[in-house]
Length: 225
Ligand code: GRF
Image (cartoon, rainbow, N blue to C red):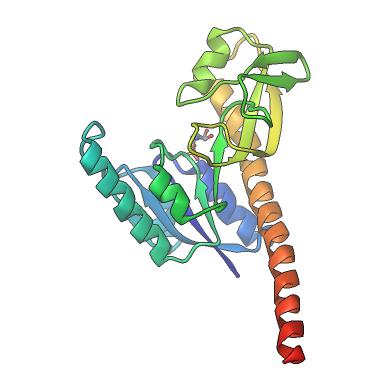
């Protein structure tokens, strides 16, 4: 069984969606641990209720660079201890350092509450034409402020540039006349709850296809000796 470590500092609805997909047999992956940067958040409660190790690693001072580096090193050690096949950022609010990313190459995905383009650029193609790609923590509010006709959700690989890594899956929702931030975010989250387990399943399947091939090659080399 593949192992996920979920980094989540929010309500945890995406964590719950992963666990529910697993329970329905739609996702072949166990959540090995949940790590949060905030104490008392929903994600940690959901983990504890599911009997999953729930770890809070608070970051005391974001502006202190040495403390920030030490935090990332500690986070990497904690995550590595659970031997994840994939690390899932589901409401994780801190940028990860290059040291952290280098330790888990091609193994970190993020879910983001806006439409992001394949090329990491500033513009995304939507069913209603080209729109600005909204990155960062205020993407839902920004979509409303700009009066965009559509927004959505994206699951993408994590790279050093914030919310700009290669896209795995993306889904769109219209912005309605009576939307406020909470209503729109709730609708985006319901897209995320379908998209994130699907994207995780797809990535893990593609990976296991590749590693099976490598194992076959190794057996052939062994027999040749
Ligand atoms: C989601 O909207 C996700 O896209 C963003 O943070 C939110 C987390 O929500 N990165 P939840 O904690 O999973 O409910």
